[in-house]
Image (cartoon, helix red, strand yellow):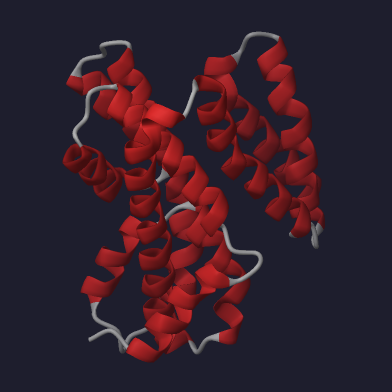
Length: 230
């Protein structure tokens, strides 16, 4: 069973000053309003957030529906966007694995992988005994997941009062938050170079109309860091 002490300790992280709750909630308010404008019912909107969760995947799904993409194209687009979660999973799971914990907890907790929850866990895992980290992580994931669902409901209800500019403003709050968090985490040369290279390469790819090749910017960034370290 899940250890309630560590579960609620993780859940309560959402109340901290550096928590992504407000930024995450703002973005999912925009998602909820967008889904309503696409013709989703409130049940479908909630179900979408329940299953998709991570914000970029929800945005890609909504935009794909907006342009009339087929179901297989939507699936592939969301799958490719969420492929970025794989390296996060690889880096996080060794911190959570413990022989005394059942496997079902790890399968369940994979659904909570998102930048918001990942950042909280990475900055707090050393304070938690390794055996109980998975329960702490499930608490964090449940909290951020709940914020996303509540934000979707609020956005769906308030959609008639949100114009296009307001929705864009709400949607961009989360990326700005992540950027600030990454700047705050610039304690090693690797993280510092990652932030600096991302700030340089991202705009360059955009200015030269290489929007569809942003993954190449990530690969180039990783290659430069590898060469730096070796």
